[in-house]
Amino acid sequence: KTLKDLGDLKGKRVLVRADFNVPLKDGVITDDGRIRAALPTITALREEGAKVILMAHLGRPKGQVIADYSLAPVAARLSELLGIEVPLAADTYGEDAQAKVAAMNDGDVVLLENVRFNPEETSKDADERAAYAKKIAALGEAFVSDGFGVVHRAQGSNYDVAADLPAAAGLLVEKEVTALSKATVDAERPLTVVLGGSKVSDKLGVIENLLDKADRLVIGGGMVFTFLKAKGLEVGTSLLEEDQIEKVQGYIATAEKNGVELVLPTDIVVNPGFPAGETPVAPEVVAADAIPADKMGLDIGPDSQKLFHDKIVDSKTVVWNGPMGVFEIDAFADGTRAVAQGLVDATAAGAFTIVGGGDSASAVRNLGFPEDGFSHISTGGGASLEFLEGKQLPGLTVLD
Ligand code: 3PG
Image 1: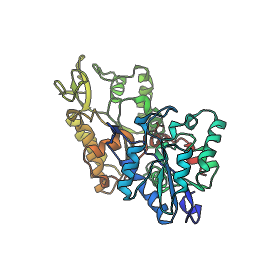
Image 2: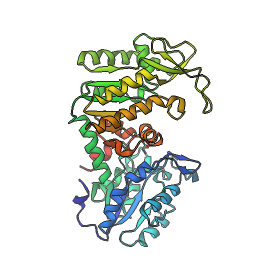
Image 3: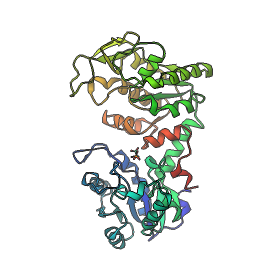
Image 4: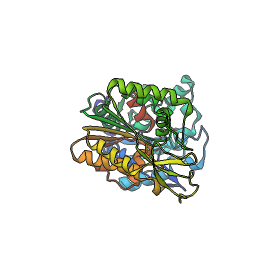
């Protein structure tokens, strides 16, 4: 169900679950992509004359009220972006939330305080969650699920509340589902999937699901060392998941059997360990089959950057999740840059390109790539991965 299924919303109080789980440094938002992604739904509802009641979580405060996890910086950023005052209620459904909602005029927007300040939000007890969701639902007359980043969770404010009110997906959830489906179910070929990030164990489901769908699997990031080791190479002191080596050997065999091209780096940027500060001691480039025993791989090397870039450009659909190296440190950011540039060039050549959320989405923005250089930048981290795994996501199925 989508917004139009909710009928005339003029004067109605509409509860919107968004994902405003943004990165903060010393109380300052370092990437507001998720907030900006929620604006189309908020604006559409305001234009219809609805009263928009936003709810979201920030971090994992585990049911405690902790000032550092307050949504105050989000309320301030929303006020700037919307050009109206967005008051923050001091609680999620208590006296202050009720008073602020009662004072709303048509087109107004209120943000409720972090839903995870309530222990019931993430409770495993479905009855407890349902009773809590009823208290939230009492604030509204309709529910819009627009927090794509949390649709893989079955929690009070994104799942249980949908049972109490007429409910529909917001524009962001609609857009994400359409884009991610285009990369999996109806992909134009060749379909290239680029995976990075530190742990292969976080990506097992995606690899398994895509081994019979993708034409090409490109692997970088910390997880690549488990692949190199699985092929019998030495990886020095690089990140390694010993317990996944056998599984990865199975993936390599399946890729070969299914005719999936597996692309691994041919050279690696190594350093004598993980630099504690921002200055790496002595980064150097070595062949992927000659990583010294006392060195740690922290990025893919220049030949691999070119190889990955070319494989990406030679595709009609590209899905990318996970950085290629420790991109936060400039000396190890070139691999991630090359992949991002590959997607930008592929987009310009007419391919459909997706940046799967979390770190890769932040990397793209923080490295200065224009958002319109990609067909879609997902706001989901875990959610987009689980979607690519082909899993049923509770926050979506509850809307059916
Ligand atoms: C995310 O950041 O991926 C979402 O906001 C979900 O957060 P969570 O992993 O703490 O549930």
